[in-house]
Length: 107
Length: 115
Image 1 (tube, rainbow over the protein chains, first blue to last red):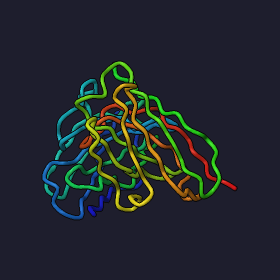
Image 2: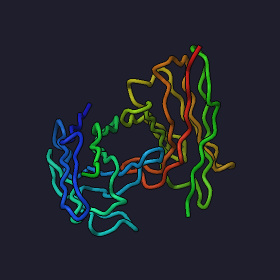
Image 3: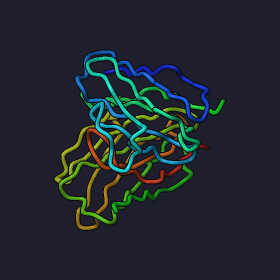
Image 4: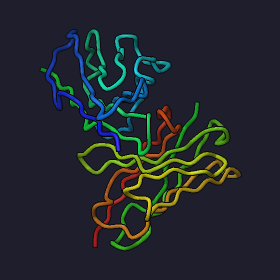
């Protein structure tokens, strides 16, 4: 099975900050990496698929990068609605697997 | 706009069989893969498995011996059965569209297993 490890597990930041969350796979997964945002009590929302493709309707301040084993999600200028938990997910093999999550909190 | 809605029991006893149905509206269930994912309270996401509209399936090996996912194209629904539940199966269960990435999700259905 492919293990996904996110860092950091939690992060405090301010509105307007640039933030980067990283995700590492236990083996190469090419660009089969997706990012989700989850707010409390809600379903996850797809932000980025195939490592760097922005899902329709997602603001352009969100971007993804990486390939192989190392990936990143960057939010260029944090907005109040961005404070949430973020998950990476690999779609290279089955079972599909998620990172443990990064909780982004207001400083 | 595609919408997914889970329906299920809410509260169950150990050893029972969990049955959840996901109803798809605003689009056809055909030509897509459909997935079940769960999230224990306060924890991360676990992929359970997916089904193609034609009926082919792929399950998480950690659950494979207890899981069955089925599809009913005439009702635009797909379903999850999880046998012999324990407290460890207490979670919010989500249905979603896709096999690689998941672009539409249901709101989630909390299933609590308790004696």
